[in-house]
Length: 159
Image (cartoon, rainbow, N blue to C red; front, side, top):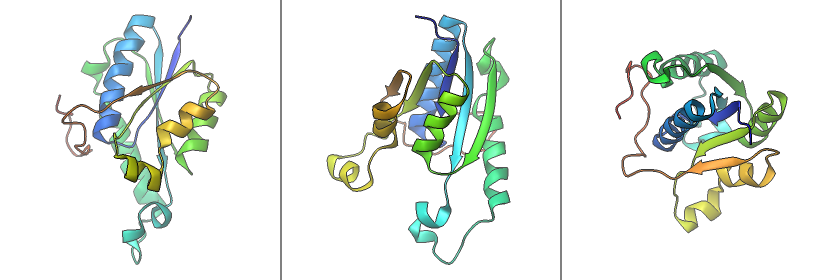
């Protein structure tokens, strides 16, 4: 099996951090590149508590650019080519479309480890990607500290 391009969708959560770290190891082992992808969802749909406040699309895009730029520091990439992308839309179709359009051989993504009830109520992006992707999908379970949220204002992510 040849793996040359790995897609790592990220929502900047702890599980996404774990998946990114795992993907970096795979990229080194297979001499592959990584495409980081963040999907910007409509905040009114994605976060009902924000009713009355809707960030401007440019605010969300600026946040995404900053967060993606700081998600993997150059010293952590060490020989792995990384390209960074953000798109507007719903995560599952955008992830699947990106993987197909960019010829990704593998998708590596984190899971949030939600309870059965939470999973039934809100579903799982990772589960739907696993079921519908045209390439293999590796899901990375969260570590004990995995639910921390990434802060793009910090230049390095704690390990």
